[in-house]
Amino acid sequence: MKPVYRKVICCYIAFHDHHHEEIWQLVQDHADEAGIQKGNMLLHISRDPGSLTQLVNDLVWWAVEIRAQELQEAMPSDGDAT
Image (cartoon, rainbow, N blue to C red):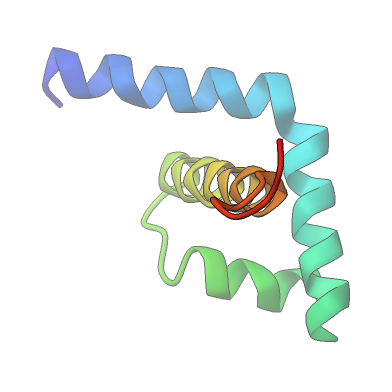
């Protein structure tokens, strides 16, 4: 593994470690909304992780994308008053 890649992976792991409760609550909330179990939700998030590190990486990316979508939806559109 290259040193730069190793640093990036460490960032994802550290982010997960710091925000794991929020990430797993997002997984639960989205699973509930879809009417599926958390394990099935994980299959949608990380199709075939080769390791725990890859699963954590996929979870972090997914959670960040979900939060970014929520923030974007909360922003006023061009026609709305600010």
